Image (cartoon, rainbow, N blue to C red; front, top):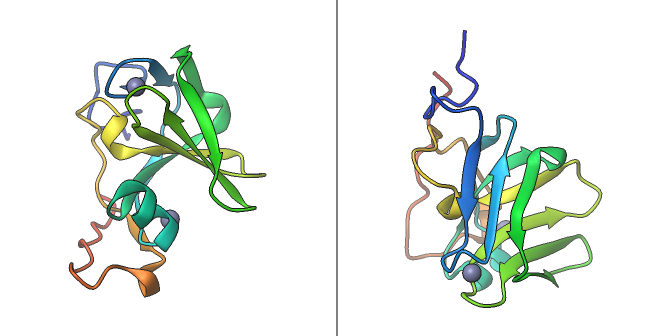
Length: 136
Ligand SMILES: [Zn+2]
Ligand SMILES: [Zn+2]
């Protein structure tokens, strides 16, 4: 049987926060990831490709969100960021039942691996695609 959170067998949820702590959240159900997006929007906003975990929207519970703001990055998605420390926390694909959570703001250990590269046709020319790790 697979542990609910592979990297955190002793825990019932994942936690995460922005750099300054103005945004703090919990994820109460298992996530899928990591998904690496190499689209130009992600590269421009994150300074690199964007590594995300897909969480059921209802499973993301906020303990603090005073400094959370949203930026419409296209007509299909908005990005959640901290207005104090500028951490990029979320990608919200409008109409989806999943909220994409930036891998780097999830407290380690995550127990996740690179699952999939997407938008590889627009990846930067200065790096090779990270290897995808098949599920155990
Ligand atoms: Zn912050
Ligand atoms: Zn992207």
